[in-house]
Length: 112
Image (cartoon, rainbow, N blue to C red):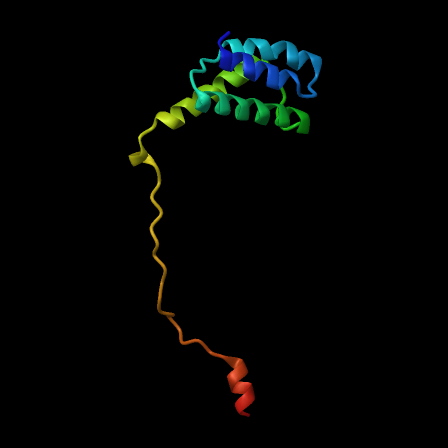
């Protein structure tokens, strides 16, 4: 284990988790290649989201925690590596003119 993996393991192990999740946690972290802070934060966020989803009942584990984490971590790495040109561009097409004139009923009411 390198220092990033050790820090992640110590942090996640200190959380109030079920014992079976803590047992699987070591396998997840050893399978993760972390070289810098970005990798550490991504792995921490993914594990936190997985544990939150398990606690909420949104996610049920049918295989192993390692399989779920490895898949999620791999998808995150692919998303980061994708070039920015493939991301969606939002254009500001605000329509300045109204197609129908605005009817202000308050002014009409005051004039009568």
